[in-house]
Image (cartoon, rainbow, N blue to C red):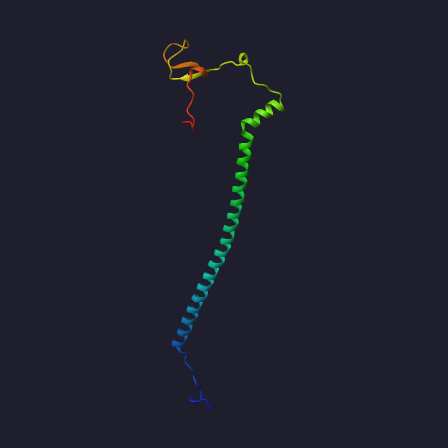
Length: 141
């Protein structure tokens, strides 16, 4: 090759359209891979949470069973017949006689006075014999 001969030298120019197409293909491929990985990650989390939910449901069932058993045990322990038999058998307690029972007086606000206080009607004392029995059912607070 002679120094003045430039025809033997080939200069290749870069095809900008090809570079753009390759860049777009790479970007689209990255988006697709990212989307697929995101979907797989969500599915893995869904499976993990479903296992945890099943474990919590199983624990809840066990706790409900324990709660039911404890309720039965509590009702058994609160049974008056059982308490009375223990008091008579283990502690040797007897029913009180009539002369051993004393009536307790109770402070009741808002009633007319019964020979107590200043006579302003602010409070009274009463015994259990003066009160009518309370109706059965839940008490009003």
